[in-house]
Amino acid sequence: MALPLIDEILCRLPVKHLLCCRCVSKDWCSLIDSAAFIKKHHANAIECNPEGDGVIINDIEWNPTDGDGEVVTRGQYCLTDLESLYGDEDEDVVEIDEPLKAVLWNAGFVGAANCLACFCKNGVKEFVVVNPATRKFRKVPSMVGEIGEWFEAALVTRFGFGYDHVNDDYKIVRVAQFTQDNPNSFHGIVVAVYSLRSDNWTEIQNVPSNVCLVTQLGLFTSGALYWLGNKVSHGLYHRIIVSFDLGIGQYMEIPFPVLPFLVPNECFSVVPTRGSLCIFNKHAESGMDVWLKNNSGEESPWYKAFSVEQCALGSFEYIKLVAFSKDGKEVLLNVGNTDCRSTTKLVWYEPERKVVKNVRIRGIPSRFGSKLYRESLLQLTKNEGLVQLTENEGLLQLTVNEQLQKPSEDKKEEKQQKKRDTWFTERWRSWIMR
Figure 1: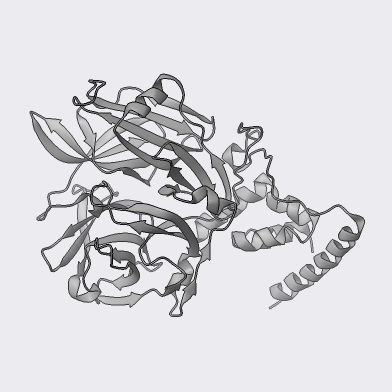
Figure 2: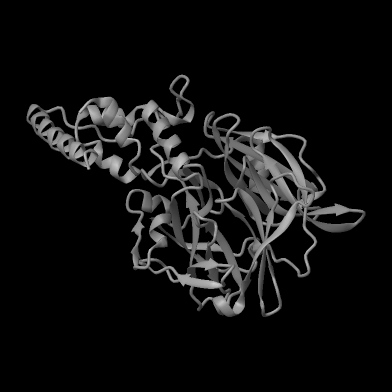
């Protein structure tokens, strides 16, 4: 079979199948590892499923003192895909194994963007960027110099991870907050941004001094990170949403909607499948309204998308909206309670008919969080500690000291590869002729 035809077929396969296909022959391996193929596969994945197709599941423990209400305890991370969660049968997950398992042990989830995920360890002093689909990872260098000293002295830090589509770059944002009670007697915030492209940290200037970020994790969507915050004006605190644009490196303030009930910090989230901010406004004992930010430029910035009835889901204290179904009629919800003895569950909920379908998954912790990501072949490795980008290919092709294993060049192995190549070609031909 001609290589161009093979290219068209392979670019439509999931990543896990492509990693197996690399062992078919040297030609297939070179094709799959090429920057052009990685770009094509990634573009095809976005076209077929623009919201993402992978789901990261991790064990959590509720901590009411934390801004987001969830803290990773053991760092057990599992993977599944969104399509599998539509089925009626029990689904198995794939637990991340060694060597990545050891890296993520006791690590907290920071965020996922495009096809990469970020985790933190050691009291938010260490960061690691991971491609969950290929299990490859890169450790982020520590801050040095004066800016590193600021963050060492900070008692309160906020952070987030996202994709800068303007510069084709992945970035980590860290925010150190100081109050007048701090020994440094500095009132305000210090912001530093790590660039995966340049592999270093840079301090951001002209940051607001009258804004305090409330939630710990910045939520990523549409090229920016978002935190719940309080703005000090005339001695009073006003609840706002603070955004940081990763492309231009600037802060913006978004008015908080006027809601009938108080909104706790853990009721602020983002909907990856709609690229929208989401606020859950809980009624007293009766249910919860789900508000989404209007991105269409209409006069009203927020609108009530739907309500979740307590009688439909049973007892719950918090909800995370994971994804919308392909037809938009159902939502995938991560539902739980703050009681440490309670369990978490994933459900598909149809607001119009108030119908609930439990998602049954084997091999996951009793209390867990769920996050969406997109599978990709993006290579994330190092060359003597430095990231070196191939010319004109951006982050899609990085030079490697940990390249995916190449097929053997032994002559006997070559013969076996030719036999496998012929067998696979015949199988592809019969599949196409169906």
